[in-house]
Image 1 (cartoon, helix red, strand yellow):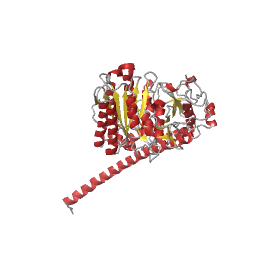
Image 2 (cartoon, helix red, strand yellow):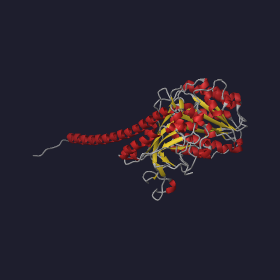
Image 3 (cartoon, rainbow, N blue to C red):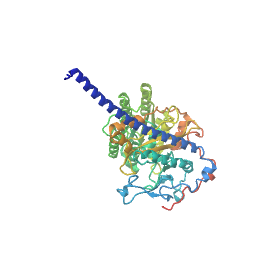
Image 4 (cartoon, rainbow, N blue to C red):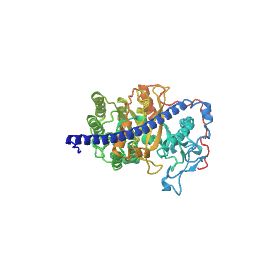
Length: 541
């Protein structure tokens, strides 16, 4: 007997088979996504637990035991010998100087943490810090060392199932101190400053729109100001992440947005490289037109917000100049423009823009730039030609925004960095998740620094079967770095304290005569207990 299959039955069977294949493919895809989600959630849980530990040990920072036992008990990442150091395997770590890591490699120690301090802060004997607060940071963060050691052991067990080595776990204090595990020596001593890294700025400021406005008038050639401004602008751009939007405006007699853009753009690695190249190509010439500079900056913001391509969070306008208005409308018109445009952003879009103005050198305008900042609840900072540090001064914007991330629904905020090429091991792709650390016993919570956990991209690439730099991978990190936008509700005294912190009494707006308690960390009262020497040994110096 023969059976005849009707066309409709064949079609139904074919559709069922195709549906079955799609269902299996969808299920497999869902399984992959769930596994990736589990990996990323574990990293977030880890970094928040590490944050909790760092906040716990901070409460013991002034105890006599904390300070006395800190003496000669920290390992310097440049000069200390590590007790259990061993040569790293090529699949664990490769120093760039060792090429393939087979014939030589770095020495490291997984049983302790190491401390790094920027050279400018390590001016004491044996490269000790000369700032009491930096010493305190070394001592209280040392109390978290056993936690870091135990965490690394747990990480080794977890990542072994993906045949991947755990990467770094570390803490960067707001004053520049850096502690990490495993212990390893820096390739260049005294050069690393955590405050200039994307993972630090992202966790301390949250998603944001940043407009850099750079004076390129002829006088910027004096005293190397043009090079200093370029370095500062490049550093700011480098610290941004995919959660941020950015624009750069240069001005002399006229203003223009550089990089070939006419609105703010997402701070991807590709876009940042394009902006940095444009900054490097800036030349100083012509006069100084403040009005056109601010007008161009606000136009870029207005266009970005209207096209709904903004971060949706806080806005920072960083304005650098070394001169006085020599072209265009005068000081009163400039101040009115800035106040009108910030008011429009608030009334029309419910967006608050904070202005950070920086006067470079003795001949720079102080009256207008300070008045602009004071009239808009912003921050003005004078930067001396010879002793000033513009890069550090410009970090005032993330210190302000950090005050909004310690409360108001953002208590467990974490920030992710777009996958990037690690320096150690050289050429290996990885990512970083970080979280801000606070003293929550005061209000507003006092920003102490940032904790972070690195991870190689190998595990995610294995699970997903896609490259770490793919657009779908990047979109995951964009979504992970969203936050309830920090809402800044500072009193006038708290805002003046931040101005004082950045530029001294001269930078304050004279609205408060207090001693600026709360915003500025209080040092331990028993300063005689502070150790004179932090380092365990300096046999490698």
